[in-house]
Length: 131
Image 1 (tube, rainbow, N blue to C red):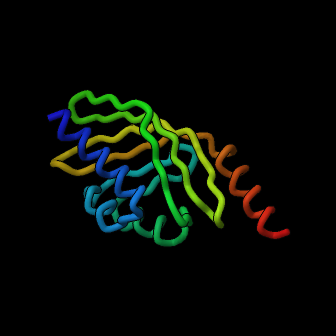
Image 2: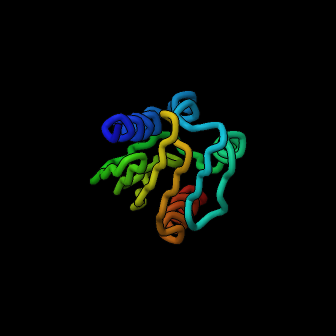
């Protein structure tokens, strides 16, 4: 079972790299709990879609790199670098992700990262593009 869950998470990450939001949303349960830990959580697929479709993360390309992955039953942990191309420039944030799988779908997804690091990189891109 754990290999199936690990493959689900790795496929989910590859869907981000491909910007395939249909596949991203299909991997999540309807009642998903999604929490970027320094930010407010999303409860349910409709809130997750509203967050991402509403510009919660506006990017041209993604390259999520998995450095380590561990599976214990229905829980998959990932150590990643999530890279996003925004306004033609790449930013990279270090992420620790926890995915809980139920009935073949991601039911809970928590990512832990340094929000200030992310915001600083985005601000630098905006400043460079404003000049």
